[in-house]
Amino acid sequence: MEKNTNNVMAYNLSLKWVVNPAFYLVFLCLTSLSVSAQVEVDTTKPSLTEASSNTYHEAPLDTIPYEHRLVNEKSNTSVTFYNDIQSYSEGLREVTQRTNLSLGYRILVISDRSDAVVSQVMDKFYRSHRNLPTYKVFNSPYTELKAGDFSTYLEASYWAYQMKGDFRGAYVVQEVVNRRKK
Image (cartoon, rainbow, N blue to C red; front, top):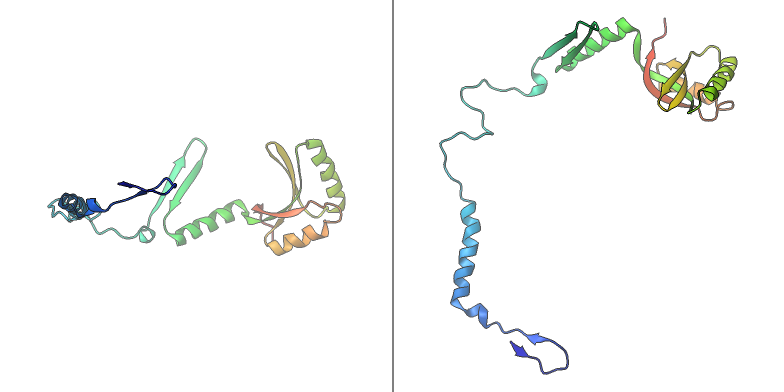
């Protein structure tokens, strides 16, 4: 390297080292390493991702008819695992008919840490809306007052709009509700 004669602290680089034949030899060795690492090796062992010849043909998971039920005899409950959407919907229909529950909407009137405040609001709510069933639910650390068993969001939002004058914080939530008798 040659020293620059200006007052600036800089060095001029000489490219004499690029012409050196040893540089070419090292450069070729380093570039050939990456090429040799990509050469495919022929193996006689089957790959882990290939299906073995002695197993059955595997179908996609969503087409395998699979239903399995676990029964807990102590608590008289059962859990059923479905892989077919039609059998799942039939099972869901059976459960909703047996238990009289369905997915619907309720109005969350108030959620407060104080049970006394929720009880006061419940009394006030009952005086003005006797025709709606009310539910006092404890979700730690809050006590919630919910009202109604609505099957559609439109019906629940209509009732929430009607009670906005008395209960400003009321809004619609989705949850499992009791089906109404027809």
